[in-house]
Image 1 (tube, rainbow, N blue to C red):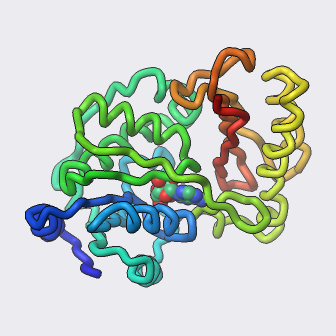
Image 2: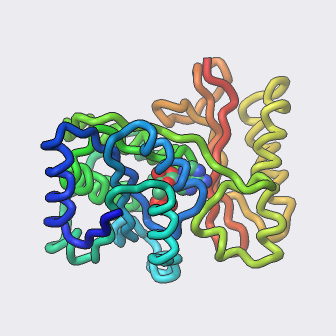
Amino acid sequence: MLTVNTVKELKSAVRAAREAGKSIGLVPTMGALHEGHKSLVDRCRRENDVVVVSVFVNPTQFNNKEDLRTYPRTEEADKALLEAAGCDVVFMPTVEEVYPEPDTRVFDLGPVAEVMEGPMRPGHFNGVAQVVSKLFMMVEPDRAYFGEKDFQQIAVIREMVRQLGFKLKIVPCPIVREADGLAKSSRNVRLTPENRAIAPNIYRLLSESLDFAKSHTVEETIGFVTEGINAYDAMEVEYYQIVDGITMQPIAKWDDTNYAVGCITVYCGDVRLIDNITYFRK
Ligand code: AMP
């Protein structure tokens, strides 16, 4: 596995691969890698000749300075995981390397970015679009892999790809969970032991709502999940919305969509957790 820190080295590594006629897959990450990231790398490994993984805590997508400051950084363990997963090139740049000058681009990502995480995390998706578009320009991958844990992010990236005309395939990958159901996340390590013990109730309520939804309205289902989670003192739902899985727009009735996905964010203590569940996809 080749570790590169500069854009120049990255480009030269992928140029060599491309000239040899090889397909290139990219997995963008912010490090503190776990089994969720590994599942993306594994899939990328199966589907491409060359696997490139970026590990970069992108400051422009953090709307909260404290979250950026405390974001876990585990560079050596990340390299070991990637080496074992068969990654070919890991790109670990500095902030100056990615942003030699401030990125002043403002994306208009349209309706997919105007709901849920959009208003809750102002600037977040713009920062995601900035860094992912830069990575796509540097690597020019054939395929790029993203986790469905960040469900809305995939729709936003598809829109960015459409607007900028990138010729690549976005591959969504299923959520990887802990044995108790909690979606794996780099931020889970920040949970106190007490909060870590109650956090799996998020997925429990989401799962139980699948059955509840069969005989209740969208609004009642939202109430079931929200009240169930808020019943735990240390947890507070920031939003729970049931949306169309493509447009991200909230639905009022089950019949409004062929693809219903419930997207949630919950504060568990001061850690913001995100998860989602698919009700149906016809
Ligand atoms: P992050 O390092 O958190 O920015 O995540 C990098 C990529 O890994 C994103 O596409 C995430 O959606 C994905 N990812 C993170 N956690 C999981 C998980 N538990 N299951 C599947 N994909 C994940």
